[in-house]
Amino acid sequence: MKNIEIKLINSKLTHNIRSQVLWPHKKLKDCILSDDNLKTTFHLGVFLKSDIVSIGTFIKEKNNIFNNIDNQYRLRAMATSKNHQGKSMGQILINFAIKYLREKKIKLIWCDARKIAITFYKKSGFKTHGEYYIIPKIGLHKLMYIYL
Ligand SMILES: CC(C)(COP(=O)(O)OP(=O)(O)OC[C@H]1O[C@@H](n2cnc3c(N)ncnc32)[C@H](O)[C@@H]1OP(=O)(O)O)[C@@H](O)C(=O)NCCC(=O)NCCS
Image (tube, rainbow, N blue to C red; front, side):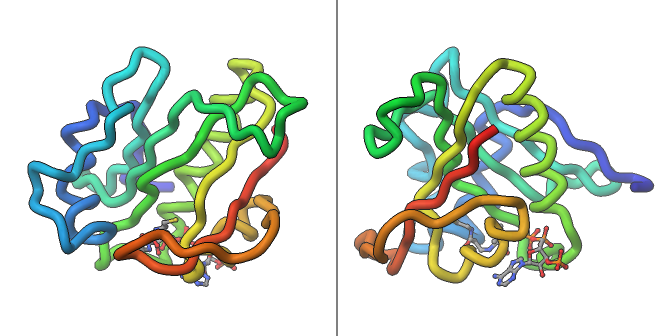
């Protein structure tokens, strides 16, 4: 698509959207994840006319529910800026990540999906596992996953 680029980015570039869209209860300086700077972690950003509009963080982390799969990544802090939601930016990011991780022989991506985002993940091929659970200050979530 014209004027759209997807790139590996430094974690700092995720902070604004994390703060505005995901964690409005946190200060900007607290919009970090403990695994942000691990060598195996990477961050993707979708850019529209050079503005960052969608972000996602991918962490090499095994979920023991899928204990027969060794090469797993966890998707965290997936968000699209409010003005650009519903314009396929998130889907572009997920599609890129699926291809990128397949090339790295990763077999599964999982995430704690907010209830309101479940349809979004389903449209990218993710499936749900189990019942809803509450993450404090955020709300209902379901475990979602996709085999690559
Ligand atoms: C969920 C989110 C990341 C989706 O990103 P997006 O860029 O708006 O999504 P896209 O435009 O790529 O949507 C892809 C498809 O999913 C659908 N979709 C996206 N968000 C949806 C929602 N909240 N409810 C229902 N369907 C949704 C779109 O309609 C589109 O469907 P289509 O292909 O049939 O047209 C974004 O809305 C967001 O940041 N939400 C707030 C933060 C959040 O909940 N993040 C997820 C944390 S687990």
